[in-house]
Amino acid sequence: MSTFLKIIRYIFSILLILVLLLLFFIGIPLTATTQTFINRDNIKSVLDNSGIYDNFIDILVEQSNTVDTNSQSEILALIKDDPQFKLNLKTIFSSEDIKPKIETVIDALYDWLEGKTVYPEFEVYLIDDEDTFKDLFLSVTMLRMEGLPTCSTEAQSIPTDMMDVECIPAGTNLNNLETSFQKALDSNQMDMTETMDSFKFSSDQLNISYDNAILAQSIFRVVKILPILLCAVLFLLTVIILLLIPSTKGSFITTSIIYLLTGLLFLILGSVKNIAQILQSISTSNIDIPYSQMKDLITNLLVPLFESILHNIFIYSLVILGVGVILLIIGIIVKKKKKEEVKVQEPIKDEKTTESKSKDTL
Image (cartoon, rainbow, N blue to C red; front, top):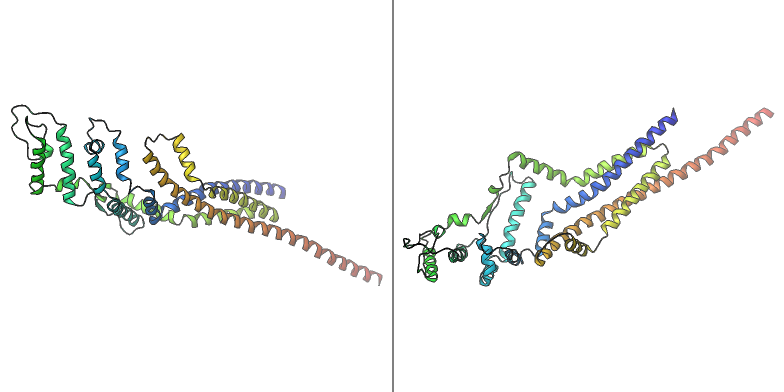
């Protein structure tokens, strides 16, 4: 009966060891990744160092190279065809202007996830200055005008609203037309409020339901304490495995080996340094990204994220190795104690037998 129970205990201990290993190889990378993304300052730093703010227009220019001449994307077509417009855009969308807008959105999202607000609350205009917006709007409009057909002889005038123009009257001078539009914009004859609102990005556009908002906050709270939860589950499994394995010495030695081998594996993984070269080789061989600017941006975004994740894995590997060493020491100590107990018990038995023999002789 005792042999049967030992077999059952070994079977259950093997199953729990498999669960422990599964928890290691899923929980550690998952925890390392989530702890990288739950810190808003870490995300801001990654974006800031990636160069996305400084190269925003350059990336847009590269994307515009794929725009067909007959494309309806007027701004991208203008970027492609007008070098001066590219320079104007760089002035409008400078890194000093783009960075606070994106960070405003990031802060609003993290305030919501941390439970400070019920929903994300932000309102960002891509172009804040009305005069700057008018200049951009006029440039895009004139590009559109250049592509419009000539009106029939019946068409005698151009509509007041620039966006309603469908054709150019015969003999119309585009330079004079641009001047008249400029005067109309400067004199506020045209209401640009609605057009400017189309360049506004606000939290209202997200359309997050109340249930989804609460669910996201709950998941974020769980993610924040994920390291504590993982440690608690690992500790519980380890204790159960130690109790299941019949041999006390064997249980500590076996568990220590699992911790030491797992810790060494994660230590090697967390010590990887050439992340940039690995990502560049992967993007070159497997991912078709046509523009070098976009490749550099993706690399600059992913490298610090992977470095942060691997750093967390490295820290966790040291903890796992430390636990493995402690378990190994306990296993060795338990073995030594048992030998000492056997040696101590033997002379005690001898003394009792000698006493009984002396009494018999008397």
